[in-house]
Length: 437
Image (cartoon, rainbow, N blue to C red; front, side):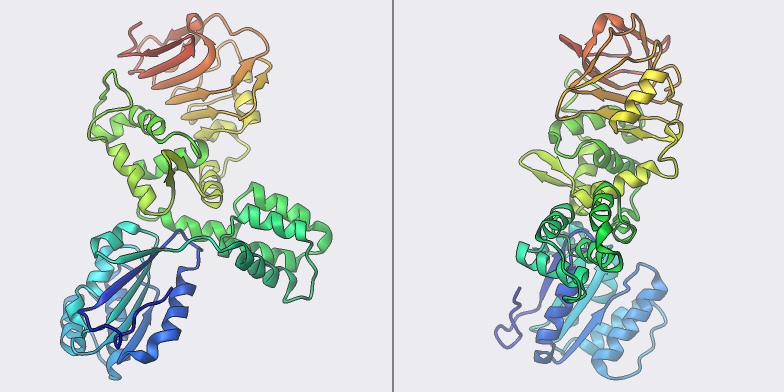
């Protein structure tokens, strides 16, 4: 990426935004840009460790002023810092990097307007939140995954110790596939290879493919900081269940299942996919702005590493204690809960939708007896080897039940159903209102 220098164009200023999920190399790119052009400006500063804490912002204002004026300047509060920046730097052509911004207030304290600095100044902001860049009308550059050749070079550098170890082509190809050419993931996995004996590289790769690596998990989890509980819950639902699903379908389901949270009261109509003014739709858009999910041709896509991060959070400390888990999506776990009546009140959502048909042995005579907080259950491409129980009593909290192979005749409502929105069963799609048959 190339930025025009102040000698090429005299303008009020230009703000560039580098936007991507965590670990994609935004800081590396910004630093490379800084080092390549800083000499063309009257002054330059690279500010990292940015926070919304007023004391930290005051410290960064001091660093900015001291760096660009070559004087020791003290700031007692953010308002004073803003006034000093405008007064002391308004005639300087500066290059300013703001690395790791996550809230508009941080930019407002350090580079609120172009006229704070001289003509031809350049401000570069790195962030995971596109909404921040939209608010300041920045020119946005999305930092994407490395090209295959670059990814291969980066991985081999860390995995081989600059040539001290030989990595087979097949293993490198698998590493690029599992990391999706994500720079931090390539470094983390490569470093694991370098630290371990070649005899267990394949095992390390398989383990990386199936669980969230601690280093990557920590970096990506920062994107969830500041999210409210509903937004975080919806992200976890998408990460655990809905990667690759139709966006309108998912939004319709989430509207139904989070209606009370979003509106303060239950709110449905016969068009369950078209509830007006839905907060859920806004939350889905926010998750895209924060680089946590994407919309590709009307389908929701979740980066593999973000999906693993979300699933690890959903598992929490109860990976092997199904009774304490809020979400179930692995085939063996779902079968265990439904066939042995092992579910408990903590389970809120169950989704099993394998690409290939799955036949399970049986379900219990009363599989939902203990699942009193189950909001939705989806079983697509799943059949029973034996017949369904004659009477399946649906939980009180259930909003969405979708199991095309299940006959409608065997379903029974609890004595006081809350408000089931959709029942999709054998040869029928029923939109229910207040549990009325």
